[in-house]
Length: 232
Image (cartoon, rainbow, N blue to C red; front, side):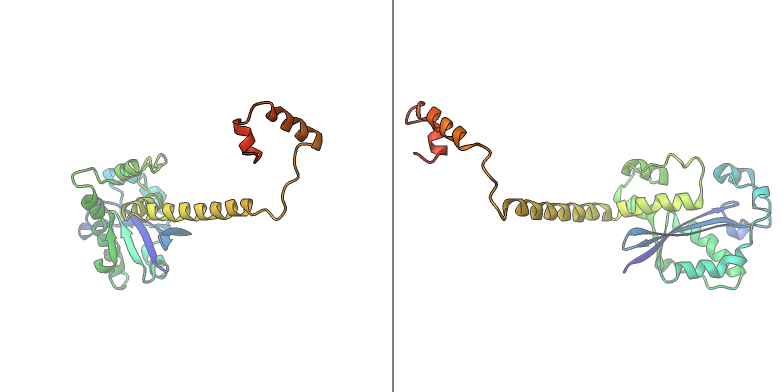
């Protein structure tokens, strides 16, 4: 079993070393590259103000976050959820930097980049010179992101899960497997139809069959229907 966790963060700014904090964390579990239905999502009180620039990105105000728990209250639960899974993020160094800063504050070990896959780097290698933002990749792969009017950690993780599967080519493999199975099932059904246990009854009455043979006899010896009747 391959277990992976797609995750995304929202923050008060760009640099945890200058006092910026984590305010939202969303995770989506993949098992064998399929969403399992398990997610993990929390908002956090950052114990500081929300800069206007950050608010315009994610829409999370200081007032909204004021009654939310601190990261410390859910750090253990988060670490339990991710377990030993590989971690997938878009521009992963940014998200890991904030997560590790929060984990350090509560005395937990840092997450290592060796277990992290950066979908931004995957996209840049696969499509050199092309736009590689989450929105651009959703557009490229035909993924509906109409609900993404602002950044949101859980929604972005759900979208990134679809993008990730496309980037690594698993979506086509899954479709090929499904189509192969459908064709195999169709072949079984076709074989079943050909192998009738009992011959169907004739649709013509004996009188109708005799009249048809009389009609064909009038067409001459080279008539194609004589071959159909087994006479030539």
